[in-house]
Image (tube, rainbow, N blue to C red; front, side):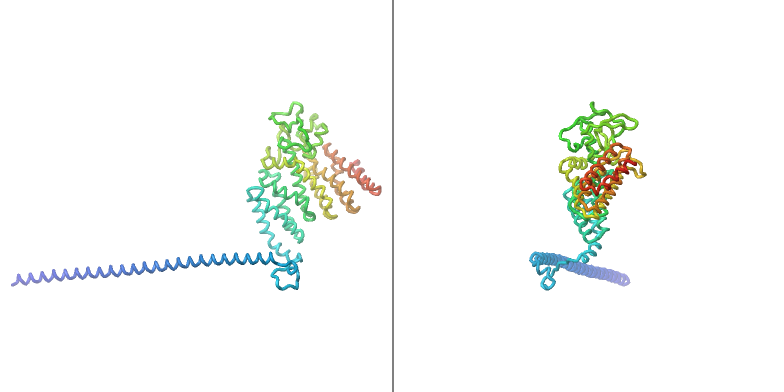
Length: 452
């Protein structure tokens, strides 16, 4: 009996254990099913959110497209208003149908241009320096030229001077790194400004004339290394600068210079034509075959601290040797006759300052390699304007020019003194031909020169 009871108890325990295991398994299945359901619901919710986001994105794209279309429509309508507007109705103050009105008062535009001056200048400078070639540089340069004319018209001297400084520095003449490829286009724009636009440069004339002087210096340097022909050279001459074959020294018919030649730039090529010789202190005679600060192959060429010219500089120098280049450069001085009575005095003072800088060092001593380009042009400008201006104006012009010419006539370099004397004589002769009442003014500088 006891054994049977023990067996029954064991069976009950086994059954209870089996029931517990079954219940645990069922509970686990229920939990797994619930977790799976929750996961499906979460996935479905995520899909719904993604779908909403995608739909919103497409809606935004559609809205942007609609906005672009609307903007294009507004632009078309605005162009139509400008194209179809009747000029009489636009200019008439009584017309109320036109959306645009012509403003003739400069004061309305002055504050707008003044406010935009700094960013405008930065944009033009950035566009110019980022230009890959002359074609891309032409647009910011022409824009700067137009802005300079506008700033002069609206009497904004600071913007005018800043734009003039940009245009005069853009060519990069005299830069130790060499002229940039777009520098030639900058030279073209600057020369157009100096010869076509009048009454806009004012105090910026000195910077413009300094740039023109550097053009002549570049031309002379190119002649010195044979990269450009000398001016007015119909047939090549066998000089050191014009030799086509490399030579370690001076040519067989050209004696070696005792010192580097002191030149007045390419404009002094008449010295070669005359076949003149000069005597240097501490040396003998030398043919003035290279009238520039740059020597030929018998010496070392130096331009802006460099011994070579880059392709852009050589191309510009060759253009300066051409008839077209010489004509444009001469017009910078010939067109001075178009300046008004006040600006011509500013112009002559600026040219006189440039001439002094070419002849004398900052300490007042004579330069070792003086140039007479601006001195000769000063004489030309004086001769033109002293014979066409009213007496009060030409007296002011002649007073400024004669001071420099008289001082140059006592220069240590005989070529400088000769150029100054020629300028004094030519201008005095023109004044005397105009009338005897001008004789005192014409001859007074000679008395000072003889005294010097």
